[in-house]
Amino acid sequence: MKTIASAVLMSFAFGAALAQTPDASAGAQSAVTKHINALHGSLKITAAEEPQWSAVAATMRANASDLDGAIAKRTANADNATAIDDLNSYADIAQAHADGIKKLATAFSALYAAMPDDQKKVADQVFSHRHENGKMASR
Image 1 (cartoon, rainbow, N blue to C red):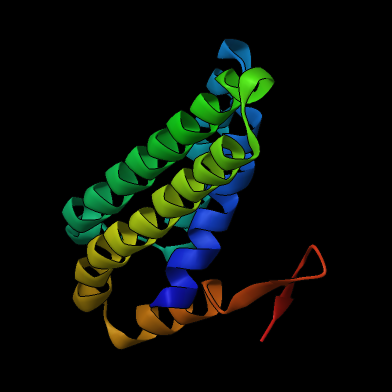
Image 2 (image 1 turned 60 degrees about the horizontal axis):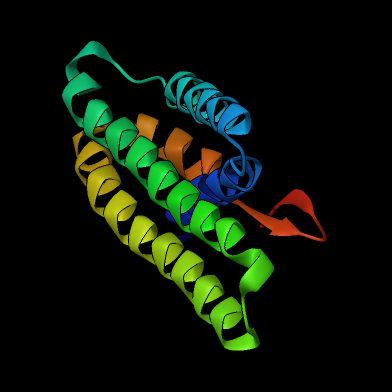
């Protein structure tokens, strides 16, 4: 489950990093929406699974928003930040990321439990990638 959450949230980290200006924030949210839609298709979410999927998608959007907020706060204070401020703001970003992973794992667990075995295998494949040297690679 950690791999699932990490893979999904890694994409949010990229999108959230773009959200340092009001104009970029809309682009980051669009990237999150595109990712959610792509994931919906990859996982072959059925009509019966839509209620669980809606919770997953809402969690993904909330996580992206929380991460955007932590990054925006760091960016807004960057000019006057001390080394300690910088470390603390980075910790806030890391904590938002960690909290998001836990929330996503919980939301995704309900969806995963509702999936038939063949669909679980698809989900396992979709989330069986890790970032290595800046590229997605199979385990």
